[in-house]
Image (cartoon, rainbow, N blue to C red; front, side, top):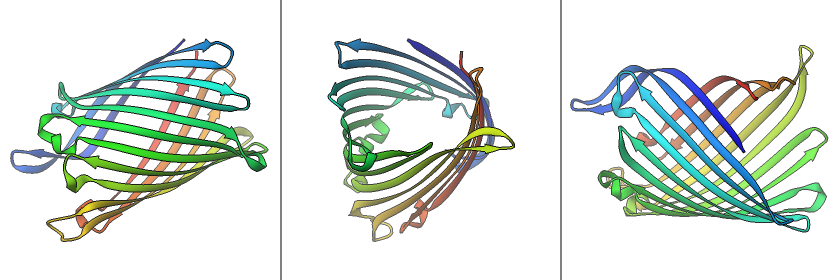
Length: 274
């Protein structure tokens, strides 16, 4: 069994939100409490069951309508067959906004992993998702299916992971039906800087998403391209202390001008393991 607890205090500038006068903006600070519990059990000689629960609750000092809670429970079973592993998982998520139920999500997944040629490890996955929103957003209720494959390999201390996935979503509103393809690569590399052992992680990915119906306002079928880049540098100490700094950038371009945006996040964290 394992448990975790975390607390985050943050301040946000220029938050845009809907009000009676239209779109307004304001500054706000928040506090977030996070917790999780995990249990693992050996089932026979080759099976393993894992049960996980995670909670996150955020409260804002000014814009109370953004207060939210997230509960997520996951059960995962894996079974080893020779050098391969097969398994499945089921996750239930409940998201509350301003004290009211906002989103229910159920995710079932099957996966299979096996050694591949030339030292690569291959993992295939199928995932089915059901999303149910509150009554005001019922047109966003959707069923989604995705298939994906990943390949990972070590080259000495360097780890490389490649991923390819294809997903389709069928929503209550035909205008929200879409299909997407995502490709990503991650490289993890130990290095020394100022005589300190560090680990560098670099990730790059691109996702192409197309919608099925013609947008009535712009007169075109919506197509989005999202490019994501992330770099993280971490240092782990024998005492269980770890320090991580990361920077990520997301560039979302679309043939609908209202869907164009970019986002940059810089973060720094200190964690202590007991």
